[in-house]
Length: 181
Image (cartoon, rainbow, N blue to C red; front, side):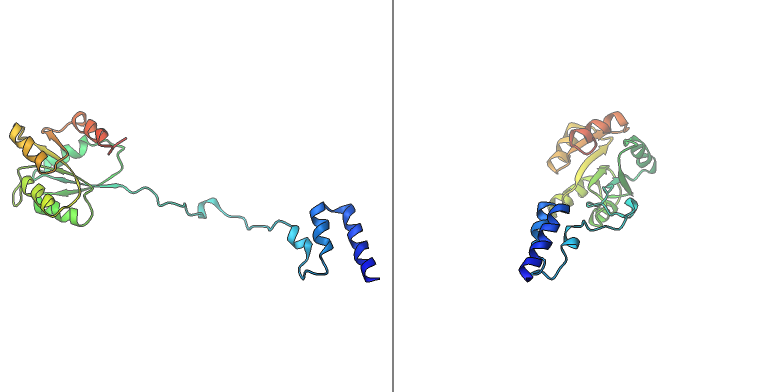
């Protein structure tokens, strides 16, 4: 009798359910869970899109240091940077401050003047090289002699820009090294 009742359930299930649900229904006496719950899609609560966290962190601004003892030169260089370049600019009035900002993690790119009080640009380059510190240095100086250019290149500077700085001088260097797209 019991087998007959089981078969009746299975035959009744065939008419109103899919093949998979019929198979699952045939095992109903053996399984403690209901096949109806197993076949239904779970309902998820509604989620506000603004509440979702992105999988990656938002892009961070590129930390740069402009090291020059002249306030006017720092302002001119700042205005020469591309206006839509996402950077976090820190300023240093001498080489010692520039190294301090680098050690604080604020100098992925450093625009460095050569003639500054307390610690010159050459001394900063030597310290960066001696301590094996890794930053992208662009020297900005009025000293455009070939010896000065070759010396800063030997000390690890990536580029040399002559003062007065213009956007036309800065932009090609940033694009050449992939700092600005």
